[in-house]
Image (cartoon, rainbow, N blue to C red; front, side, top):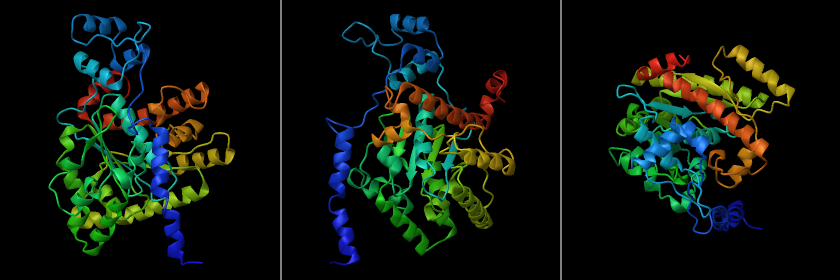
Length: 388
C-alpha cells in the first residue's frame, strides 16, 4: 500500500508538468506573459489628463511618436507604456514629492482565502496605471502573486532571486532581486517555496536585527518608488513580522463571514502583542493608516450585510467605504493567470466585467487617496479638488 510519504510523492510526480501545461494553455505560443491591454482614445485622454487634440498636436510636432495604425488605417489603441510617455511629455504623471516618504503598504491577514494576493496584484497594477512607480514584493512562499505575473515559481524562479539571500544577510541591498514586469512602471521581487527556509533560519537565532532586515533592505531602494506593496504569508511568522516592521501603512482584507470576522479579531490581538514586543526592542512603529477592507462581499446575502454593519459600528471608521465584491470576472481572470485590469475584453459578460472594474477602481481609489493624503506635496491639489 505504501507509506504516507509514498502517497505524497505519487501526487507530486506530475505537478510540475501540470503547472507547465497550465501556463502553456494561458500564454501560448511562447509561454511569455505580456501586457496585451490596449486603451481606447477616450480612456487615454482620461488617464493622461489631456485632450485628443493635444495628443495629436504632440504627435505632429514630434514630442510623441506617430500613432500605431492597424490594417484598416485606424489607431489600434495605446499601451500603458505609451500612455506613461505621454504623461511625461505633458507633465501629468503622478508622483510623490521629493520630500514625501514612499508609501510602504502591507496587505496582511493571517487567515488564508481572504483575497490578499488578489488585492495586492490589482492595487499594484492600478497604481502603475495611474503613473506611479510601484514595487510589489512577494513575501509569501506560496507565491500566488509571482504566479499571477506569469511565472512558475519553483521552476522559473531560483531561491537566490527571492528575498531569501537578503534575509540570510548575503547582500546589502534589495536591488539585485528586483525585476521589471510586463506592466509598465511596476517592478516585482518574486517568491518561491524555498523562501519558507527564512522562517526557520530567522527563528533559529532570533535577535532584534532579525526583525529589521526587510525594512533595512527597502530603505536601500525606496527612493526609486512612490509606493511599495508587500504581500506577506497568511501567518505571523518571522517574515510577516519583518513586513509589519517595514510597513508604514496596513490594509487588512476581511470577508464578511463569522469565521473570517472571528479570525480577524484574533489576528488583531496577535498583531497587537507582536507590535508591542517589537516596539520594546526596536522603538515605535508608525503607520500612516490602518484600514479594514471588506472582501469577497456578496450584497445579495443579508447575513453578510449584517456583519458589514457590525464591523462598521465596532471598528469606528477604520473600515473602507468601498467593498471588494465577489465577482465571476475576478475568478475567471485568475484562471487565466491574469488580473481584471489586464483584460482587453470581458470573459463573462460586458455587464459583469464593467461592474467588476468599477468595484476594483472604487476600492483602489480609496486606498490611493489615503496614500496621497499622507504626502504633504499633494495637500494643495487635494484641497483644490475637495478631497482633503
